[in-house]
Length: 64
Image (tube, helix red, strand yellow):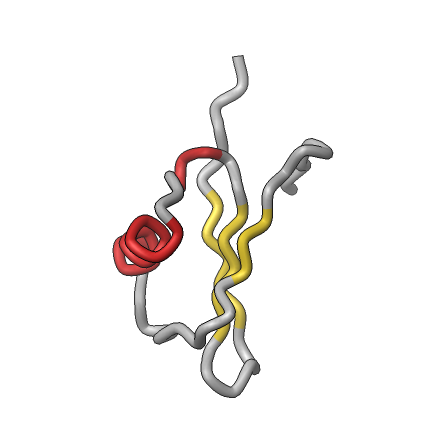
């Protein structure tokens, strides 16, 4: 189970994404299109062309 703080950022990619992409491909898309760092604790949401599937990329920030 995941729990999120109230300051969670959610980025939604409006362009359809190839759902065959794995972590590395989605990570590259986040960096080149958004200029964001995936390890910042935000959610990155991707969908396919028909909007029938979602992929959510999340890399949690370690708690101290």
